[in-house]
Amino acid sequence: MANVTVIGAQWGDEGKGKIVDWLAERVDAVVRFQGGHNAGHTLVVGENVYKLSLLPSGIVTGTLSIIGNGVVLDPWALRDEMAKLRGQGVSITTENFALADNCALILPIHRDLDGLREAAAGSGKIGTTGRGIGPAYEDKVGRRAIRVCDLAHLDALDSQLDRLCAHHDALRAGFGEPPVDRVRLIADLKEIAPFVLEYAQPVWKRLNKVRKAGARILFEGAQGVLLDVDHGTYPFVTSSNTVSGTAAAGSGLGPSAAGFVLGIVKAYTTRVGSGPFPTELEDETGQRLGERGHEFGTVTGRKRRCGWFDAVIVRQSCAVSGVTGIALTKLDVLDGFETIKICTGYRLNGKVYDYLPAHAADQASVEPIYEEMPGWQETTAGARSWADLPAQAIKYISRVQELIETPVALVSTSPEREDTILVRDPFAD
Ligand code: GDP
Ligand code: IMO
Ligand code: MG
Image (tube, rainbow, N blue to C red; front, top):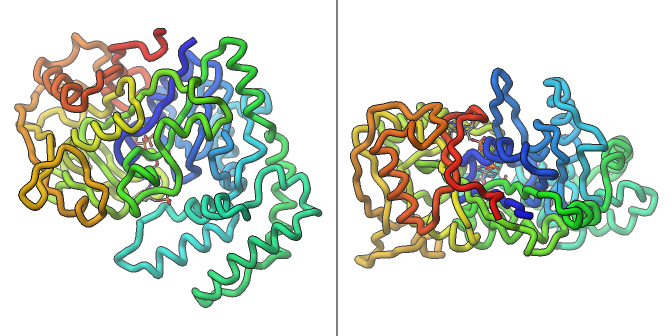
């Protein structure tokens, strides 16, 4: 039975949430496998708009939704998000929601450190979401994290807290901050523990059972490949691996479970936060893309930087993530442009590149090589079949898939769940 792994193929905000929600009706479980509440996904279903950060997007359809071990979990953020969604009528119970008991926690001290570092970095800042993601992953790989399962053993936490606090106190002192308030931290953990433990379980076990029963699993990635800590625009990246390969390690299933890798690709390019962005347009055209695409961050409300479609980075993302097919989203945002540009390569020091070089200075210096295509004046907004698309829009899609060397499986033409064109079914074996 085919599973699907959804990942972002640019710098995030490609429309993963919309596509996961659309696919979720056809799967038995949706699993988040990396990232945390730095993610922000907007789902539009009729009159209802749902904004999710930590909960898998499958929760809105009532599909079994699981937070895997690869996620860093802020339990207070989770509680707030669950309350908000329940207020919108979404049912979240121990039947349809579980989280991994071996998830590392994001604590208030992680958020502190994220903020202190960003403030001190001045113009060199990463532009993080300020959610404590980086510091929490650091503590995880540094083997000093507090994990979900520790919440059931709070009385035996002393030596772990010694290690954690020794590390954080030294860093905090460097910023002129007082040491960690241990008493408060333990009190906070005691208060939140019963809520978290209600949903905690060895999800690897549950997922393996689901898989053996022949059920379909959808792995939901957050962020995008260009924000991957290895493959992205380092150091302007997030602190997890966002590539499809992480689905296995971050959920407790082997790599053969990944199935069809669906790369979500915006029909143009956006980025939030600092870092290189070769096709960025700081002119009227960029402004127009941002306005038409409502490009403001779901999490921080920041304006997203906008630019033309960059086939070089998407081809690279598809390669390093083994993308089987893409979902091309926000095609409607390009409606009405007289001409549309696509970046097909870069020029750097007189040399032509068909990939994004690894060094930050080179990434910041590459000059995009564009080809230009006529746009279309008809509307694609709300199109639900290939036949509804103008000929020139079809030519654009064809050129995109040719340049990225990966076929188009879905096309999205509005924020609304059903405004989606199925070209090739990702679940087909
Ligand atoms: P994610 O982080 O990848 O889930 O994406 P976000 O939800 O942060 O950003 C995508 C935004 O575009 C959301 O506001 C969606 O409602 C919206 N969106 C998704 N697909 C389409 C589309 O095909 N057309 C338009 N106009 N908006 C879309
Ligand atoms: P979704 O899932 C877009 C960016 C931040 C910053 C960098 C590091 O909605 O696509 P972090 O807080 O992770 O340490 O910030 O990564 N970033 C995102 N950009 N969409 C996201 O998630 C992002 N999550 C993190 O803006 O540049
Ligand atoms: Mg987003």
